[in-house]
Image (cartoon, rainbow, N blue to C red; front, side, top):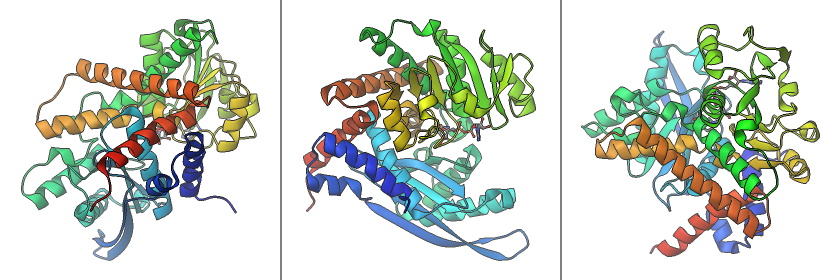
Length: 422
Ligand code: NAD
């Protein structure tokens, strides 16, 4: 029987726990979520009828700080999925060293079937329902699949109305005009670019490769928020040549490199990259993944590199922009092939890092300029990359297990320091 998402997450965790010989009682304490809340709540539809929806908020860990994680609206949301996503948020926050635990939420709903006003009423009611466990010092939600800045604005307003004053720190991913942060939009893609740059430096320093990033070719799968900014910043700031790009409409290749800003302009008007005129040839998404490039950035979907295609991957470095783009079986194949992977919860941690900056700015009602945000993001991710690479050497293990070890060490240490109450 196939493992559930949470069981899969535990499998990765246990592999790292074995590497670091984690004490069994700590293993148990860190495996289980601290709190799981399920709410069934009524929403008035536009035609006057009442529909009951089910939602969840899970707090996996609160040891290093308040829980942090998005809320998704999707018909397939389950408690098991939300638990797995909350669990990963704990390790993502810990690996980059920001003072958060892990949380996640979701409502079982297909938002494409609702009007804007129905989505607003659903959002306000759901947020009120979970208010018993959230708060700017307890648990700070954010956007995820099918939720956006407008929904964060409704959440912030709902909470503020219930409390009696404006509370900026209650959610992140808000519009900039009501306390959102500059640089949040580009943060995850920018984080991928920092990790790619660090990986190249590291492998050059170790003598594994002999090529600077500005002589390297890159393929990026997915041209949405993460993929487009990863491509843009890698090209404009690191001098890398982006030879392959793709999205849901297919892929394309240009041996001289795409002008990424120009492709972004094209997508603004045409929604997808299909039909972009300055390409040498059209590719399928499968062909894009197996291009002969130096760096591959899968930044679209989960499970795109599997045991079927892993052996055909020719990139030397993979920077996992998406969550879970490589299956565990494929991971073993890539490791054997000597491909250097920056795991998802490090490579895409730029988003949660700038969310943390948004929260800090909101708590202080004092806002930073873009340069300060970018500098702080770069230094956090550069340090996290170095910590994980050191750990991989220390334990003679792969980067994914090392990232878990770094994160687990921090949470386990904090748990020991705090002790058991009472
Ligand atoms: P997005 O919706 O902005 O973009 C997704 C892109 O993937 C689009 O270009 C879309 O066309 C493409 N795509 C969809 N189906 C595809 C397919 N079958 N083949 C190829 N491309 C396909 O989403 P995003 O915010 O960029 O998120 C991408 C991934 O990164 C997701 O796994 C998400 O969980 C993860 N992630 C995002 C953030 C963030 O801050 N946005 C943070 C952490 C992780």
